[in-house]
Image 1 (cartoon, rainbow, N blue to C red):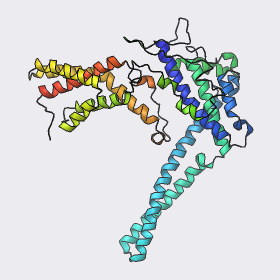
Image 2 (image 1 turned 30 degrees about the horizontal axis):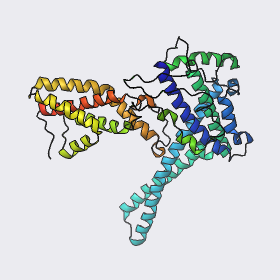
Image 3 (image 1 turned 90 degrees about the vertical axis):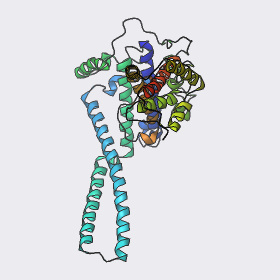
Image 4 (image 1 turned 60 degrees about the vertical axis):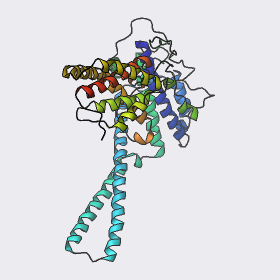
Length: 400
């Protein structure tokens, strides 16, 4: 099972990196630098283990400086775009103010307000000029693409360092590749930051299935001739690369993701989390909408469990407390997975992730690979528990 989750995490990170590399390769074709024109070939050679990782100076202070510089450029560029948006709003207000001045004679108070506005406008323009100087705005196209190409290679080396001990098909980053003693010491320390204990037994390049009562689709860690090593028939940077999310489609039919219900279930769980708040009341429309979000088989399960529980239940505060504790216990592990599922979807929306460098959610942290049968049972329990809490506490499903 550990092999399975490690291969999933590695596969998803490499898929994301492949997409980034494809974007850099497309930009590289527009560069004057011949090396950047051929970045697609460089990246393929890197993944095939042809390029010496030592040439990347991975683990050296120089690389740390490059990464720090790139982060500063990103932060400055993010600040620049925010400043440009503010400047645009101020310039629109400036044009409106000029039209207003043409129609009316401004008094002393209005003159003071205009002076304050002009001062603010000038400060905003100064801030934009400063941010342009320290952001990607002032970098040449070739230099910016060069930064990105180097970072892609560094990240790939980092993935090999972290997952190499567990995924043998990855190119090895050995100490012999490192030129300086400083690089070797850094490399020795870095795997410890992974917080994953080394696997003692022999590691194979195939993960096991998710343990369920029904036989799921096997999820394999693909070899160099498949997902992680771009072949000529796929074409580097082609549309197939963006659509070929094999980690996503590897979920078997017995999983929530394989059934296409991950996002729907996540929305149900977050609504239950909201409605379980003692200060919340639920009108009939909200209750019906929540119920209609469930697939038919889950509706039947909820009806069956609810009828059995309501028959033997009276308005006992201790019973409500028991349901509250049970609901809290389930939601402690179910709610974070639901939020991760929603966040994972949002992160795939480019408009939502502009300049967002927060750690991203992995697919294995979502409901996607969860066993559907067990997830159905958990959702049924929290829905029945919520209904019983409302009944026991006389906190009715409000009709208002």
